[in-house]
Image (tube, rainbow, N blue to C red; front, side, top):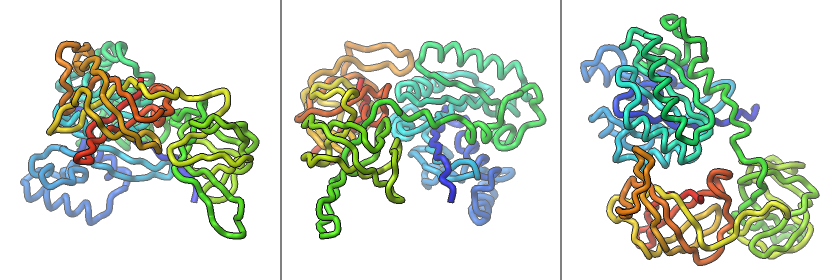
Length: 417
């Protein structure tokens, strides 16, 4: 089987902008759903007295979502075309589910922001674009939906595109594209629309299949967080000691000079073993085992890097966090568990610098109580050094999760500044 590229994308938009309908339409028109699934939603649609088949029901998996007709949790859907495999994170539009959007978007290559053509750029649109820029999602695709309700008007489309571009100029988003669609009727989703001849760009499906994501990974800063050390205790592999993990940046070749952190000892890569055997070179997001020339004491949580390109090593770390916990807010001077790549440490909250007003991007330095769905900047001190890059340069070595030790709940996601 040919190894097809995997694209992860997340959908964002206000309530009732048609996110679930769009995904249903994408799955249906690309023939990615089974006949019995289609027949089931046909029955539900009929029972609810709707005209036609409500494709949104394909993604609203929770019973309460179907009953209320809204999306609450992050629903993941998988489908593939001959060109690519896709994972969709269908995230909710409501303000109270910011944390769910952060969860769904943290690994995405593309953020699909839906705008209702009747309402244009609203506060929620700005909010989602801001979160996409904070999470450094490489590609932003603005789908201007419900064009059928605006008579497929080019003026409406141009105005919304212009409004969004003016707002996005203030944000850190690198690649923004726009497509006018009608998810309900399938215009420009998988098939080109004959009702918008003025639009010359690609369909949504064509965009998703062809957007260039190979360079979304960091191929400059070489990082291998160690997940486990492989020692087969057998005569055949008497001296075998392999360091296994998933490459978080850069590339490793046989003969490369490398350094193990935190010890600082250097060595040379003698062999690279991947899932299908030996390979000469390894790069993200591959999972491999490295064998080194020298016997160095390396264990889980350590990191193998290049001699002349090393991450920051330290215990005082600045983070932007999104707070997930609905019951307790962030405790200044509180102690929490923290996960970073394959390291588990504990940390103390030293300082809350400010809370971000997600609608205006202004910094609130008066009210520093960080509650559920708030985004803020904090400083922590960890019990042992972490090997970090800024989130901007590496989304893997630049991210952490914070865990309440009492409940074992993940209470925040953090991005290293």
